[in-house]
Image (cartoon, rainbow over all chains, first blue to last red; front, top):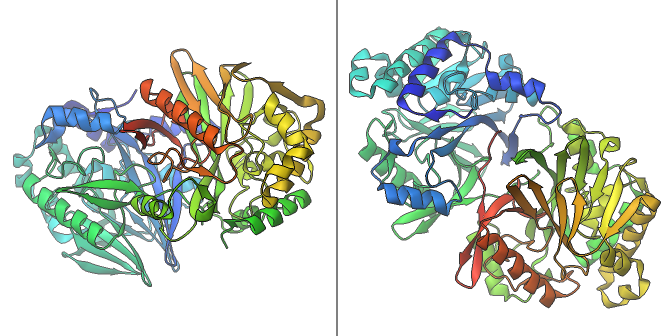
Length: 320
Length: 320
C-alpha cells in the first residue's frame, strides 16, 4: 500500500505520528533481508563527507499542485516517464554531514507522519553505523512533518544528544495557533507536531535569523515562501561548496519547467515562486552543485537555464 | 587515484587481474566504516526482484570515443554537467536477479581489471547478504574485462556453484588468437582474461545463440557490434518486463544525442551503431523500462525520441 498525500491521509497519519508506533516499513525491512532498504549515497564536498539518506517517498495528488494547468501537469509527468494520470511520487531525503568530530543531520525524515513508505531515516542511519545518540546537531529546513517527524520517537526526542537549529521566524509561525486558521484543515495537525518536536528538545532548540553562519562550514540561506522561515543550507569546505535547498524546488518533474507552479502547502505560493527563481538563477550563474529534499535520489545535480525556465541535470553517481 | 582507461592502463591492469590481488578499494571499504561503499538499488519487475550492484567506475579518455567530433564530445559532457576537458566517467553495474529459488547474476564487474575504483561487485553482493556460492547462474553480455573480471578471484571461479551462460559467437571470437591481431595492442590481453575466465568455469559454461530463452523469465536478445556476440537480456514476469542492454548504449552523456558515436573497443563500430538505433527505437516504441551496464546508477530509465536522436530519462528511485 502506497500512501497518497491527501487531506484525509495527512490528518490520519499525523495522528498516527503522535502514537509513534513502530513503522510498518521498518518491520518489513527486517523481514525482507538479505536485500536491505538502507539506501544511502556519500559524496565529498571538499573535506566534508555528505551522505544522503533516503527516508522513503510519498505520493502527491495532482490536485495539490498549484498555479499549473492540469494538462501541463500531465505532460510534465509523461515527459519524466511518470504516470501522467496518477499522483506524483516525491522521495524524501535527509543529509548526514561529517565535519571534524561532529555529526550534523539536515532534516529528520517523516517518522510516522506519512505512512509506511516513508519514515525510514533512523533505520537508514543505523544501517550506516550511526546511532541516534551520535547525532550532535539537527538542522531543519522548516517544520513540515516530512522534515521533522523522524525527530520524534514515541513522543520523545529521537536524537538525545542533538541540539536543534531552526529559523526564528519558522519557530514563531508554527508556535502561533492563530496561524492554523489560514491553512487547509488537513494541515492544522502539523502545528501540533511542530510543537511536540520543539518541546521534546526543550532548551536544546536554538534559533537563527535569515542568512546565518551555523558553524562547522554550514550556513543557512533564507528561502521563504514554502514556509515563512524556510531555509536552505550551504555546505562549504575550502573552495568547494554545495547548496542544499530544502523544498524551494520540490517537484523535479514540474517545477524546473514550470517554476511558478507551487504546492497547496506553500504558506505563500507567490513568494515561494520568487524564491525558487532566485535560487535556481543562483545555481545556474554559479554552476553550483545543489541538492534538495525531494530531488530524485541520490539528489545531487546542477541546474541549466532553458529560456525562462530551467532543467535539472542529475549528477552521476560516483564512488570516492 | 582514479584510473583513466588508456592503452597503457588497460595493459597494466589486465596483467594485475591475472595476479588477482585483493583490490585496494575493498580494503579501503573495510577501513572507512561506518559509511559502507555497498551501493545497490532494488526494483521489482513483476514478481522478479532485480538489484543493481555498483561495481565502481572508470574514466574513458575522450580520444577513445569514435565517430564524434571532439567539439561535440566536449559539448555533450558540458551539457551533462561533466568536465568537458576530462575523461568520461562510466559507472560499472551488475544485476542480481531473484527468480523462484535461483539467483542469477548478469555480468560480474571488473574484478581487478580496471584498477581501484572498480571491482567492488563481490563486496557489494556480500553487503546485501549474498555469498558468492549462492549465485546459481552467471549470464554475461560479452567477454570484456569490466563484465567478467569479477568472475575470477585469484585465478579461480568466484562463483563456485554457478553455471556460466555466454553467446556462442562471443565465445568463439575470444577463443581464437587470430582475432587478437585486429584489435589495438591494449586489448590483446583481453583474450587471455576471457580464456582464463571460461577455463575456470570449465564444463559449467553453456552457450546460447542469438535470441534465446534462458529460462526463469530471462531471455537473450542479440545486440552485435560492440562485440560479435554482444547480448542484451529481457527480464519478464507476467506482463512486466525490462530490457538490460549491456553496452549497446554505453556513454549516456554522448550516445543518446549522437547515436552513431562509438568506442574504440567496438569490434564493429558501424554494426554497433545500427544495433544501438534498433534497440533505442524499440525502447521508444514500446515505452520499455530499460537499463545498461554503464547507465548512470542505479541505471533504470526510459528512452525518448529527439528528432533523429534520443534522450535518456532516468527513472526516479523508489522503495518497494
